[in-house]
Image (tube, rainbow, N blue to C red; front, side, top):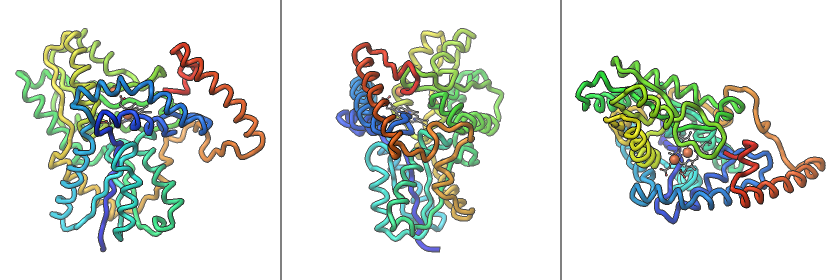
Length: 388
Ligand SMILES: C=CC1=C(C)c2cc3[nH]c(cc4nc(cc5[nH]c(cc1n2)c(C)c5CCC(=O)O)C(CCC(=O)O)=C4C)c(C)c3C=C
Ligand SMILES: [Fe+2]
Ligand SMILES: [Fe+2]
């Protein structure tokens, strides 16, 4: 076999405070993050929401040192993976493709098309699949493949999600066990899984398998941990006023406090690196809530980062993917439980004359809604659930 490449996909985060605004604009410009039935409103709306959110978000990034550590950690993971693959006899080239910040997925693709890679493995750094994370990156790649003849010659395979991988489960269990063992009585620790949330409509209407994969993943980790501790699963980081997956982390913490739980071991479960939601939201905000709720001992399990057992798991995933039947981007970008789709896949807006008329009408509605929100601070878009 020839030279292999591994394309690591991740979200990306603002390196400095001045990057926060443009980063948020990129994030909200993504139709997989805010779903609108008419694409022309996407950019103005993204600009509007990003502008409103920037200072609050910057204040949070300030608390964790003025930027996201995501690039640094992802690069360290890439380097460690390269070394691990080399130890297994594969001299692989690693590429990092972020969805919303540098190094962008486009930059990774530009590099790898110059490198003459024989076999490419596309590996998202999200253990569980969501339309809003891995799905979004797969869609972007699918578009690039469609429009770039050079890419069409590239042999590749995709790993859609990998939350069942034994080494990953082992690494998670080890980190949890280490934290439990710091307690005076390790068996009394309540294991609290906090997953990043998504709007409920993603799961119930668009068929996102995310919730099911998260639930299965927590069960598998508990089985691997093989200890008698009780556990809870909740969802954090809700944005906007529509309903997200429940229970919300803040409510669950309060409830456990009321039940008299004194030792909480919080496990971030949907992301493999430290980032703003672990360093700020869990370590600062939820810790404060827990204290108010009467939980005396609040411990947070570190993210996997470059944990050697985890890096070995990524290497095994890569090697196994090359031995397995290849998976196409078109197969994985549509990964859904296949309930009702909204908007319909491949829906072409504005092609027919009737659509043009409708676009005009919707345009008016859109601007009225925006004006309404700017004036009142309570959006029609929020109220109608279009915007999360
Ligand atoms: C698996 C993890 C993630 C899911 C699922 C996810 C969905 C999702 N996120 C937003 C909105 C925002 N996310 C933001 C930051 C952010 N999100 C994730 C992971 C998941 N998001 C990470 C790792 C990060 C942080 C990157 C970093 O800088 O370290 C932000 C910006 C931060 C803020 O302003 O709070 C927003 C906004 C939505 C709407 C969504 C599902 C639809
Ligand atoms: Fe997010
Ligand atoms: Fe947050």
